Image 1: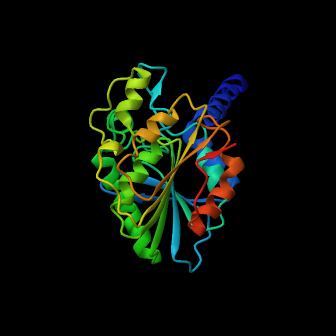
Image 2: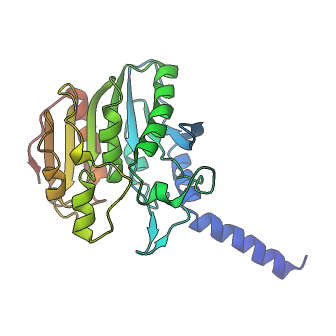
Image 3: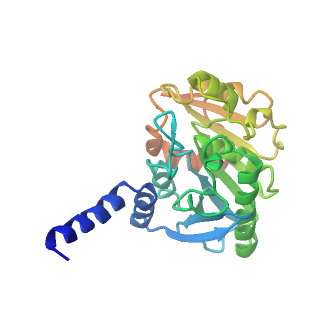
Length: 276
């Protein structure tokens, strides 16, 4: 093998590592000290990242990430939808409670595995099939580690999944959504996207039990999921707080307030309707 050919192959490998969203996500998780395992749900493999604080505590925080990049541009389906912005990991890194990041089916390097298809991360990204597979993985974790309380924390599209998963677990004590996509029809209409056929809409679900405290956080400058979409989806939800952060966008600046949010959830506090 010539040196030039060797250099080209090595450069190709390095470029792949730099551009592959799954590898970048894994690297960030490793830098935070998280541990990755792969667990099988209802036919799908799921990446699960743990912060390693699984002491003998009854409560588990379950972090759910956004949709990532289902599409490249507007018309080409991504080969790997794994989030390019690992914001959810940065939030979990501030959490002193036992916490996991629960990956979606076909994300984190699994997009080419059976029975994955692009529909799972595009039109059916919030389907019953997706939710049931995630439920099975989480049920195994809850039973294996004997957790009696759950707090679901969902960013963007992860907010939708948090709403659906919460009602399937009697252990749920609270939900926190950040810039949550809680009305997928209004969101698609706002962006002039095709409807997410095959997905369930959180706004159409029956109210969650009153025992579940809900904190729904929105950024006033969020152009992806405007606060009005979130607020409009909460009309039938009891025991819920809608909180606007005036200078926040879709991804900024949740890290700045995250420890305060966690403290509020832990203490079951009431939060002011609007934050400066």
